Length: 291
Image 1 (cartoon, rainbow, N blue to C red):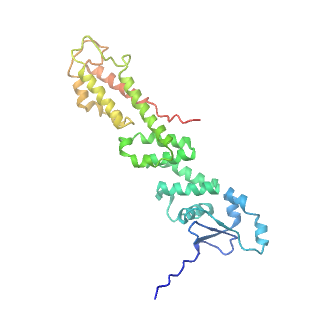
Image 2: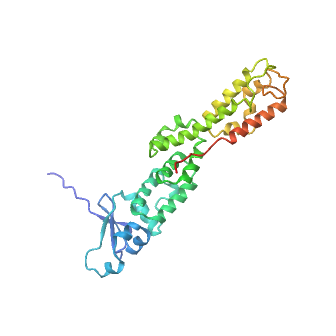
Image 3: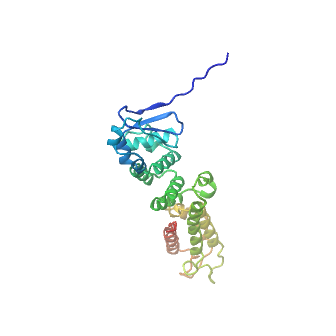
């Protein structure tokens, strides 16, 4: 005899089961129902303000309570409704993953609910973890200030375009990847151009017997910024001075010309290191977002 499988029946979410509430919502699983007061929904959501008649006409009507199906999964809908209703989330916002927050933002956009949107936007602006994904959300929603802040934080990610491919693939559009890549590349290109600029760093000197060490140092500096686009490894106090390329550069080929960057006097080394750091500190960080 075949087993009879009992069909699942709709049920009210325990946080939203007030029998006096005059509006019923359901998620796209068709089983989870939410009862909320129309005044709460109309106050917090332009979608409901446009679709729900006045509270007085609802209460005076003998018809069944209005039922709206929200075409999104139950869990993110529950979280958004908690924000709308001023209830604590079962999982605090700080503990949610960025994809989970992204799902909430999609519902908030559908409901056109500015209050919850402001809450999530404020949190994301403060968040420093996973800057690539924060950047992606900011680009999707047109939050340029947040996108700029998150993009600057991506500079600290070592070898970002090889080490973080999975996160980069999650960015909302190809153009958002290109914009981020161009920001990183502008820094690398300008750093290389500055180091090879003879008006800042002499590359040739008739008194130098061997410029090889200086060129090796330039190569090391360029490679290091390519690896860590923030330049922190170059700016770190004492870091660059300990490189073998730096030590060799100031001991390998004496030069009598005080203006030459191959000269191995301590004063010349100090001024050269200072110029290198100034170049790094002034590298561009702007995304150059289209207006």
